Length: 163
Image (cartoon, rainbow, N blue to C red; front, side):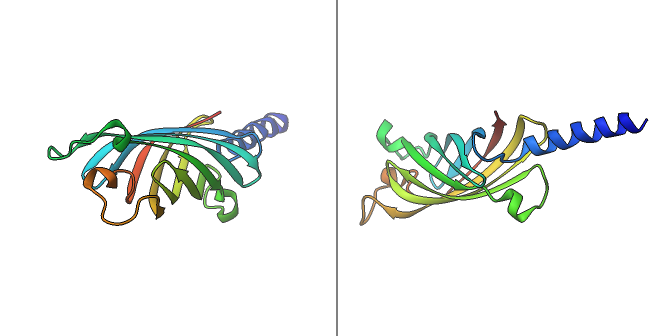
């Protein structure tokens, strides 16, 4: 009986440790919906762990649903970004399956920041939410409504996958 309990505890411990950010070599993919003023769209991100609490990756957003009055080209609807995250879920230690990550991004529209959180229900599946905001826009002055797409505060929610 003791051996059975020990084996069950080890399996549970390995499973819990695999669900949060695991450091170097950890891989996360997220896909979700994003929302901003005058538009909604999709977001995709990929993050790769470089150290115990640091990851970098890429991301892309595309505005699908625009207000009827907005006529935006592909370049105005889309953005690609290089992301850097500080994965501090294990530092704040809320739950072993919870990851919190503030970060910075260089996109095709701006230099910005983001704050996100993900919660994993199983070893490979969870949910995420992320808020992104520009810190320095590449184009200054009065921007058109089309130029504001992904050059303003936006929120994303969706699915997170652990590899």
